[in-house]
Each structure stands twice: as C-alpha cells, then as structure tokens.
Image (cartoon, rainbow, N blue to C red; front, side, top):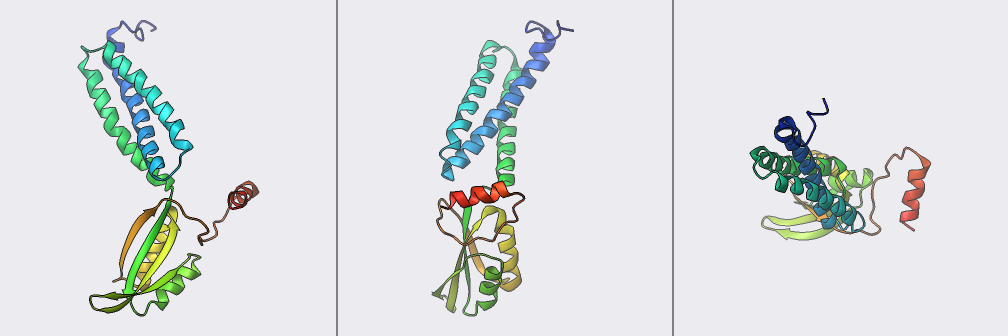
Length: 197
C-alpha cells in the first residue's frame, strides 16, 4: 500500500500529485481572492496574513510542477485549481458579506413612505432635494452593511418600485445609523461597544 503513495510510483505521479496540486491551487487562489477583496475594503491587518499563506501554498504547488514538467496532468490540475479557486473565493466572500455600502435612491418629490420605512427599519436616512429631467426629485442616501442590502432593496421595491437607485462600496464609515442586530451572547455585545469607544 505504501508503494502506491511513493513519489516514484505511477499512481502518485498521475493521480495523487495532480489532485494535490489542484487542491493547493484552490486554497491559494481562494486566499488570494479574499486578500484582494479585504485590501479593497481596508482590512489592512487581515490581508497580510492571507497573503503569507497564499504565497506559501503557491510555492509548494509550483515546486511540484517544476519537478514534474513532463506530467501534463499537473498543468491541467494547476489551471483547474486556479479557476475553481476564483469561483470559491468569490462565493466565500459573498457569504461573508464584509463591508458597508451606500445606497442612493432617486424618487419623485413625495418620498415620505420610503423614508419612513427605512427609518422604521433602523437605517439612517439623508434626503436631499434635486432636479431631474421630469421635474423635482428627492435623493435619499442610506449607508448599510452588505448583509442588509437585500432588506433595503425589498423596502425600495415595496415603497417606490419605479425608483432609480445605485449601490456603491463605502470604504470607511464613522458614526452611522444601523439596525440593531440580535446578538447571541454578551461577548459580542461587549466587543461592539469597545470598538465604538
């Protein structure tokens, strides 16, 4: 059995090694995708840690490729792992939903329903008068956590289904108004309070 997993065996060279390279590339590209996203979100303490492990895994994978240049399955595994790593990295980031976004909503002059619903849901709302192609409009701004964006879009579609809106990433926000999350334990509540002092 141990002979099958020996680096000199055919099974290791043509099956196990390509699988290891494929899995390694998934991990390092997933970390790389998350690192780039964290850099763009201003997470300067987390990005270097991810970068270290990303490059460490990459060096291991590329060294195996260089030692097995005559094995075309290693090339396929390397490229396939890269593609899958991008997909998984984006899926993980979407699940984490890290960051803050600014929603800009342009509605006709009567915006009371939308403003009230957003306020009732706990979102901070700023309303500005504007002039559109068809007359006076109100521009409503709200800053929300990415995890809450679906709730905000639902409110917009209920109150102003024909409203124009755009969503942009906000790198940093201070003293915003956000809905109170239901925290599962006292440690999380204490951590949030300490962060805002």
